[in-house]
Amino acid sequence: MGEKFFTSKEAAKTVGCSLRQLQYWREKEVVVPTIQGSGTGRSIYYSQSDVVRLAIMEYLLSVGLSFSEASRGLKELVEADLNYADRKSKKRWMFCWDEKKRSLVLEEFDREKAIASLDQGQAVIPIGLDAIHQMLKNDLLA
Amino acid sequence: MGEKFFTSKEAAKTVGCSLRQLQYWREKEVVVPTIQGSGTGRSIYYSQSDVVRLAIMEYLLSVGLSFSEASRGLKELVEADLNYADRKSKKRWMFCWDEKKRSLVLEEFDREKAIASLDQGQAVIPIGLDAIHQMLKNDLLA
Image (cartoon, rainbow over all chains, first blue to last red; front, side, top):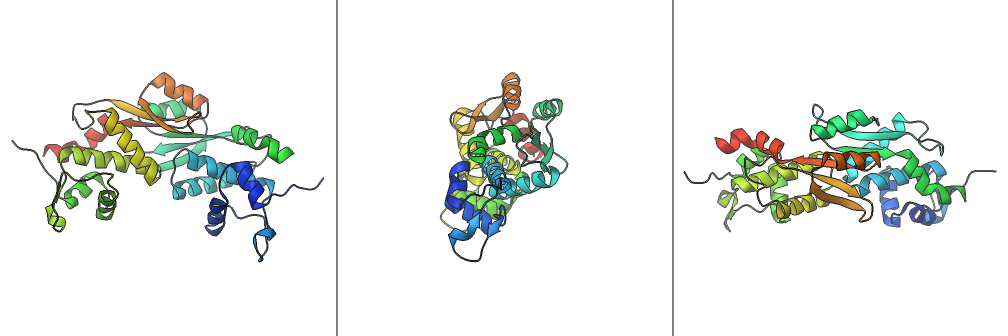
């Protein structure tokens, strides 16, 4: 079977971001492609897990988060959820504003807790891995 | 009675942001102080409404929004709510992710709608003017 790998161009198209963004994320070590030779663009290949991470990053930026907040969020998520790239994972996470820490904190999605946050006037940013996998499905399976 | 005005230093302290941020926001015309002479720092004074706008900007950045998203949000809010700076305003707004527009959209806070957004895995960022006025209360009244 083997694993499917993606060129930068393919990964950008799949995820819906620009080549420039991918390059920036490589430089900033937000998402470093699994295969990255020392040569030119040709030697860069993203694994399926890499593409999932790219999609999460793109999602976090799309909801308006800053680059630093989005990359911190992605890092936390990947560390907290070893199965983030598993296509069958339907896990939902959320970033909730934590008044004490004065920052967004990653937690497993909990509807009651999310509603309580809203009632306190605090931001909630859900991250549904199911939705992300669904979006990538055609490209990753093909 | 007269209106109270704030120097940059006072405004920064009240809102909890840096002088550098205030300067950047002036340059980018996110929050331009009501009194701004052509001289040096001494001729800059923020009105009470200016300070409320600064506080909203600071809040939007603190929940992790990017500079461009936060300044767009502030602009929308100020245009939508003529009474934003009224101390008695307890109005609550929210930014909800709009799938069609693929961006955060400002709406009056509606608990049902906010919960429905969460259930669809979409981000909700409440903006409670009451909380913002509460935070500023001591400094603005003094």
